[in-house]
Image (cartoon, rainbow over all chains, first blue to last red; front, top):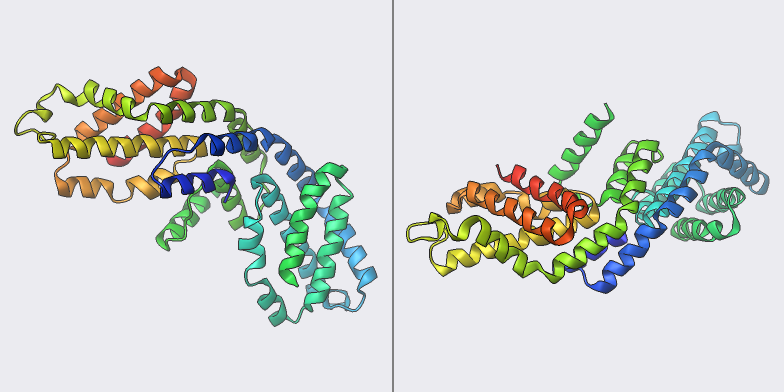
Length: 158
Length: 181
């Protein structure tokens, strides 16, 4: 949910129009919109590079893991899931909220990976590597915002 | 093909009651997510246009909320007050029915303003239109007169907020009318 739908839902619950404070927050959100689209575009344009770098770092730091055991299906799944989380991060950047990550990437994730036999601590390391690889593509200030979304994923998998 | 998929997914979600209120941003994200895609260029361009009109949207919302009740009064005066509908035997005769009409126009204006801020019609579907036509028919509320009142609300709102913002509000007023007819 964006700040826009959130404020509308709050106003609707109280049967009123949005107040000046809410409208001014929404106005700021509109103003920051193109910046957020720009950051998301950098990440999506460099998707394959980020995932490749992230994987390399991950397998260096965590060589004994299903995706590095020579099974091509496991390896492909690891790359695919990194792309998947990077994509959710771009959504979160655009909407300015963790909700897309929470809904599509955190709820049920631990149970799913545990049942697939993926050690959660390795997954956490992998997301840390993906985060580093993503931040390397971004100017420092943009990185701060993006880092917080990766941290949310990491926290959610611990 | 993507459009078909999108509407299929939306319908499926709706039928399961899982469709949350959306705005221009979350609508694009949700439809991209179910297809596993990054936001595409046309979607991003749409969002940029939406953000660029943000100033106008916020201003229009402020003006409308400060004038909501006169807007409704003017719209009803313009379209219904001096017609047979308010005379004995008409559908707005007795204060109770008149008040119900004003209340519904209040709702339409408030929800159209929400939808204009969100840049998305899903709020109207979810909170207003879902089942409204059937309810009006069951209660004997004349749809034609309702639509006339919404159309004049569109006119008086445009007079207040100007042509550009008025055009944007018109999208949502017209959507209500289409949903009713």
